[in-house]
Image (cartoon, one colour):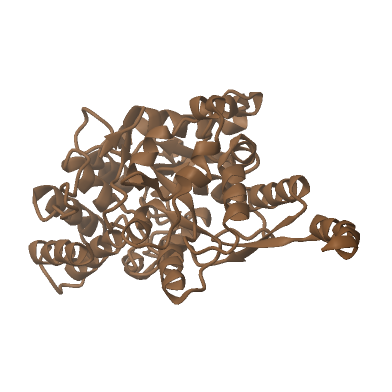
Length: 434
């Protein structure tokens, strides 16, 4: 865990023809990503422009994007590699790097990409420490593209109406108190129209929830030992699960239907005005502002993850999306060239604007665009990561640990298990995958 502050006359006559043919030869590089270059949204627009710029500079290379479901990208890439039909480039989120690090599916990007970066670029890059998570001996298996972290997103307008400030949710106890004040039945039909805090607790398309973050915080940022053995069947884990259960059963600040909601469902509900606050990846900020329905998206705020105690904020877990190259890619050189472009200064500038992602280069962070008032939340997120960034070990399979925490919460709410038994099963499930 690391704190945190890419023959004869005939032959001669044939040469011009070969040269002409080579000029028009085209290599098609396939890439699996969750983005869709034909859809709206800052990141989609950024990738579309990136591909257009890259192909203009490299007319002999074409990038073919094949959108996939984000939650299964890593697993599908490894399965495709085993079957001999993986794409040239795959995207992997930090939670599922274990799939890559514990297989032979990914090429070594050190000689293909990183060793080719000029020294000036290496010095400009802000995430050099992140390579520790994807280093296997002397090999580097992935390059970061879009770093992100989870933050508490909240409705400024609802907070102001309730007399609350971000300081009131600096701890999880404070979140519970604030959520009670924010839960409102505005039409007097006996059911809240606005819930204090949103959760997505399904077993599919899941993401980090408060219970996971509170457990990591209670473990001083570490829930795996050096051998990737999970260690959260303890007081920190039990208190975190109990808190999440109480929000549904006792405090009544989260709807019971959260048990069946994916993280995407819950985010959609947040954008629709049903929740006053929710733990969400900062990369969704632009999307929520754009799709806000029934409220002004400019009222969307960002606060650090709450802490278990008031003496420090919760962990700003440095996660996000990485690019990997298939170890058996028939287009290795071209694929590496595009990975270098996506992770280089030109790509980073587009991920930042219009993609609205955290800058990965100092030169990008210092551009005038980042000083505009509309990017106050992005600057705030960068500060949060700099102050309390935590990097999970890349070789540990913790992607489905989030689903294990969700299942534990479900079991307790539904009366199928005690907190102790549910958490014990969750820890065992995580360890069985190591």
